[in-house]
Structure formats: structure tokens, C-alpha cells
Length: 264
Length: 264
DNA sequence: CGTCCTCTTGAGACTACTCAAGCGGGGTGG
DNA sequence: CCACCCCGCTTGAGTAGTCTCAAGAGGACG
Image (cartoon, rainbow over all chains, first blue to last red; front, side):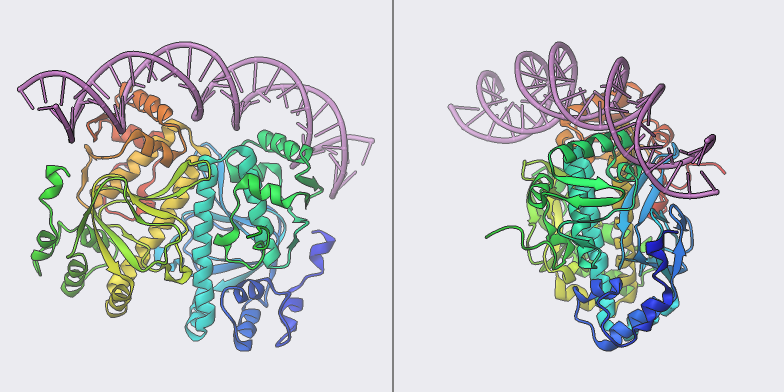
């Protein structure tokens, strides 16, 4: 789709073999949770060798689907969402590079929500039986994935807090802070900002706000010199104040990023 | 506290031994998820032998606590909640009889929210190492608890949908429908209603509404002959319409109750 | 160059909130 | 046993935040 996406290919990601994998989002992510051996990283590299480019706004796994494979995001933004009868969409979670979706939900047998891309994405599909073999043979990976699932749950609880009891400005700020930390952990963000290739409508469906109100809220944030947002590039101008507005506590993300902000 | 609570004692719950356990909420709950052997039920009975009565509005596990034991609710309503700096409370989940809290979150090491009672409760505290022994020796129980955790996650997603995109009336209706099914599954509700020993403030903190608006919403539901609510006793007058308003789909709860309502 | 999609802004309406006051019922102390 | 008191419920009035509808502007792409 865009030039910046084309340069990444399945071959590129797999070819580095046993050398450093610091550019591989899944490995970067899991390494922060559990120390991994060379063998572990090699296996992880291998299962994400075959990647597929997916267009924006494409459903990857549908509600009701029988859960035959896991989805790993390597580039771009994907989400879990549910639709109401009225057509309204509620986004339940973001899947950013390094996120592996539903590694152990096989017990339930059937999806209760849909996985979809927001932007153009590179994803790998991992057959469920291959994945469970790996989990058995590589306890570090298994532990890391279990931990990462618990973190996703903690994140969902934060979101519930967000839409349940925060104002539009606070919600927005919280989401931006969360994404900053999560993306920085996999090398897709700095303290200064990141690429956020989604629409204001998407943000509204995430935060329980109308697209119009998202727009007005972002204007306020721009006017107060908290952020800039131009052609999908988010610039963070005042991270401390943004975090203060959001009451953002990065601990739940279990990441090394974002912990240096508060003096003791 | 109240007379109806006094008559339940730890001894009472444990004494039935190997006979039928249909009155035991944990067993009733897990049996619906995975077939259990006599040995399984005996073990479950044993771990919940020592119960403790807890006063309303008592914190059982605090945010930041090191996760040394699991909590099993046998009677009454408990919740997971988080507090904001402003003092606002967001309730994240209800724990009703038969719910076992956090069986496998040991990996995270520390709670990111607080567990607390709403009403007077009977609870059992289960040491984490005893629990993990049981999970190893009784795969059925382990499977059932894992399933039950996945169901709790699906429930959290439904709540996020609820506060994110439904009106006050719809949210309220959805919560009442969910509780009806969950309580019926453990014998604490019928199609006609159940005891709901919580305040309107609690409901507000659950649904992201003010106590005043909860009150007005309940008045509307009473005026429309959807429900009655008198001295903590909820009467459901028109379950089909309630479910229709809520767009309630009980499938996510994986319970045998509540599936007969829609003709094909 | 036209079209479509997203962003932007305005105006008016509505939902839900806050503050405030009165009511009722169950538990407690005299 | 009665009176009081406290907590939770109820209702009103005014307000704030957010929504809907609508129209126009700015880009990206064919």
C-alpha cells in the first residue's frame, strides 16, 4: 500500500537467523517479560517468518469463528471489536506490533468478538497446534505469553476504568500515554511521539465518544500544546502533563519504558 | 449480621461429604463447564470447608498486595474495583457465589485492583500453593477454572461494550440480565428475580453513572413494569423485554440457564 | 479534474451530572 | 418500647458535557 510498508517482507524478518533480533517486535516484547534463550528467539523468529500484508479495515478473525489459528501483528494497528445491533462499534483492545492474539482461548471454541485491522498491517498466522507444541517445548515462551495475556487483561480493566469514569480529555490522554509506552517497548515510538495510522472515528469507537467530540477534544489538546497530530504522526509535546491529566500509571504494562518520569 | 446469613456455617458446607453437592455454588458452577468426578467434587468441597463471614464493604485483597491466596465467594456479592485520585470508584467485575478469584494471576506478583465485599459475604481463602497442587492433580478442575477465567474475560469485554456504547437504561438492563443468568446457574436466582443486596451507589460505580441517575433509570424501569425492587429483592416482571432492551446474548456466560428464551 | 474520505466547525438538543432538600426504614440507645 | 439517627432512596432544578445533524474544507487518489 504505502512505500514504508513495502520494504518489510517475510523474508526480511526471518533472514536474520541467529543474530540479534532487537528489531523483531514479538521478541522485543517477550524479552522484557521473561529472559529468552537463543533457541527461544530462533523459534519465535521462525513462526513469524511467513507474513502477510493486510489492507486497512480488514477483518482477520470473525465473531463466531472456530479459533483455528492465532494472529501475530508485526506492523500496523489492529483491534478487537464488537458490533451492536444498531451498527455501533466498540473497540475492546488494540493489537500493536509484537502482540499475539488469543494464544490459549481454544477452550472456548468460538470467538465472541472480531479481530480487524485499522491500518495496513503485516501479520503472521500461526496454526494452533504448532503454537501449542512450541509452548510445551519452550517454557520461557509459554511463561512470557501467559504474562502477556495477564497484561492484556489488566489493560482491559484500565479501559473499563477509562470509559466508566473519566472525561473525554482524560480518556484520550490515557490512551495516548498507553500507546506511547506500548509502542516504545517494541521500538515504534519515542518519548516525542509515534505514528498513529488511525482515524478519529476509530478513536471515538475506542473511547466511547463521537467522532465529532474526539475532534474537539484533540483541538483542545493541541491548543494546550499537549500534542500535535499531523498526517497520522502524533507528536507528544508535554508528556508529563499528559500523564498527569490521564492519571497514567504505566506499571500495569510491565514494560521498561515510561518508568523514569516521576522523581522519588 | 442478618439471620439468613447466620444459618450457613463452614461446617454445614463441608459436612455433606460425598453426597450430592448441588447446593454448593462452586461445584454447581464448575460442573456446568466440565464434567467432574466424585473425587473432584470432594476436593472442591474440602477447600471451601473453612469459611469466614465478612461484613459489607470490607476489602479482602488490596491493590498492591502480593497475591498469597485466592478468594472464593460462597454467599453474597463481592467486587473487583479501582479507585481514582479523585476518589471515584470504578467497579470492574462482580464476584457472586461460586466465583473463585484470580486462580492463576500469581505470575504478575501484585494486584492491580482491590477485591471487596458489597454485601455481607461468606468467603473461603485458599492458599495459593494448595490451589496449585489441586490443579496439578485434578485436571478437570484445572480445566474448569481456566474456562471460568476465560468467561470472566468475556464478561469484562461485555462490560466495556456496556459503558462504552449503551445508554443508562440499556446498561442497567444488561447488568440485571447478566446477574440473573449467573445467579440462576448457582441456584441464587429464578426467572422471576433474585436478591441483590447492593446500593444504587454501587450500581452507579459499576455502570459509570451517578447514583441519582441510577435511581431515575430504575424508576423508569419500574414505571414500564420491567422490574420491581423492594428491600434488596429484585423482581423481574418482563424478562424478554429486558433482554431485548439490553441486546443481551447469554452465550458468553456458558451457562445452561437463559438459553430457552428465543424461539428459532 | 473530480470524487471520496476524513477532518473541522457551528448550532441546537439531549443525556446525564451536581447540588440540594426531603423522606423513609432499620438499627441503636435511652 | 419508643425515639432518635443515620444511611440510602427519592425528587427537583439548574448545569455541564457530549451527541446529532449539517455543511464546508482539505487531501489523496484515480
